[in-house]
Length: 508
Image 1: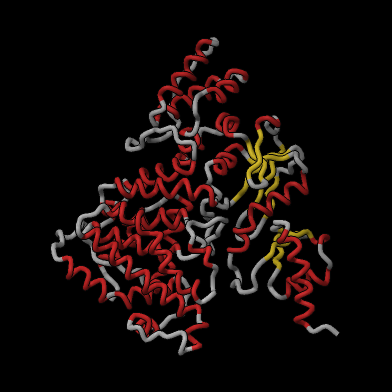
Image 2: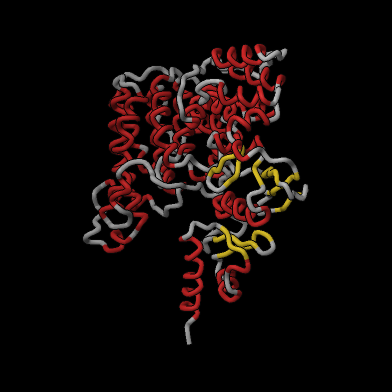
């Protein structure tokens, strides 16, 4: 007779079949009752709604949202396809968000469907889906994004309500900025006699400096006999944003977020201290805070480290060959990696204190920081050596966050743009806040992004003469909440206030 563990293993094999196919949800009739109940009982399946389940991890705490946020889009794709076949499409506004790379899980997903019920479907963690019985765009005006049926960009810009430009200005500008010319939009504007929409789009293009496209829209519509009146749908201008013909919406989003957020930071931040001339004294202070910094930074990430372990690592008394417990201990590898990374980051700080551009130093050195951080784990066989090769090559999710970081291709577009912004930013407070935030927003690595972001932050601190600053583990909830506000709601003020408070009342 099979043991309970053998029975569970058999059920997990059944679940693995779905996961190998890239499935994120399972219908009740696709798996045997015994396997399904066994997986639910052991925490590997969770009920979303009657007849629909998602895979989960048994170590997730009750009420945790990570599995749901990671499964949300895949679940909605499968659920909607099961109900409507191909006769559904996301709303134009939600389509534009996805085209712009904003995969934040919405509170309510708006869907158009030929057989829509006009009633919301309640889902997990205060989310819902509303399928409205409404006409769909033509097949030529639809696209597929990761299993989601969406409006094409041109069709969505025309169909979107004026409120989209006010509520989502970053995404709207990012998508307008990738338009090479007005051809695609004009074909639809002229065939549909969309006079008011033409005026709105012309005003939107002119808002951020794309005058040529705005003029082309107006002249073509007027030549066809339409009385078009230009109207800017945005509620403000971003005077620091310079329009360039960049094909990636992700690059535009990073640049637009930076320009919008930088305006809110200086008022929250203490003025830079007097210029430090004693570089040795600054670096000695960095050495003095190492144990405190390592303890808090590693603890924030969930590692169970002690000050004794950190001291042994720094003093060279950590010996994996002599101490089998150290060799097998993941936390010890993290502590050793942190020490090695801290040492090379200190060299970067020294370069900045001597007058080097902080953005250039971070761009040049950050891959070395990462390699030192995870080198011990590679040597111990805990992770593969290929992990040190560069940026991630797959999707990641942030535990408990509605924000979904950029896909792996977008990371390669966004990171050079990020470092260019860091190099050219004149305000040290902006470099500190957005250096940390935008880095973790992009999330370029599979692991270690938080630690890397805090190291990057402290290199920027040195560029403004601020002291090395610790993010205390006791304030982890406030820290993560502030990052979530910036990621999901584009509100950088709570994060700027948080970092400013750490400067004013440093952790000892």
